Image (tube, rainbow, N blue to C red; front, side):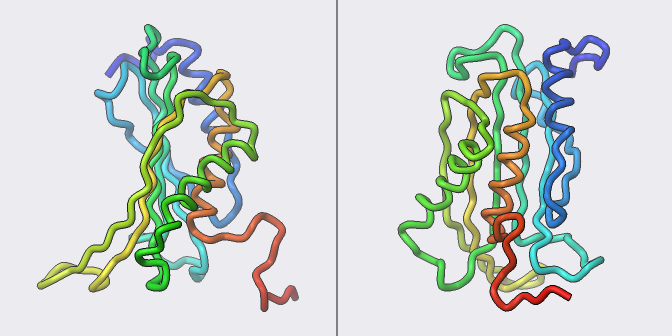
Length: 193
């Protein structure tokens, strides 16, 4: 890993713009250690959705979580079409009635593209996958007997050095995957005091 004092100014500015994100209160943001071998310079953060949990409830296994990794190669990479690349992974727990829904991957992908477009986060070379997974636990493994999830993995190249709109879009993606209503919209049956 390169020495922090040797990090290029454009990388430090990109990291600062990602750190500046101020997500909605239901989202918990934490810095992560980024995988060092993906590019000469890397940085990452995670987002967990605190949807429908009681205050102070443990988030050891959040229903929805994601991580966004910033990659920077000053020499650029042809496949990236630039010197920066954003890589994301989001995992959300499914309700039983969503299992096997053939439209779920299309909807999952739209969470990302709509979030990027809504935030004005300009990009090129967007690609990724949406996968439905089912895991059944046996024996002494802790946790619920069965987990059914949707996973979105994607990467794209931002076209501007300020990545704050991309961080905002990523938080919007996690909120959509968690089923949170748009900011300012209350769920049906919710009463204000």
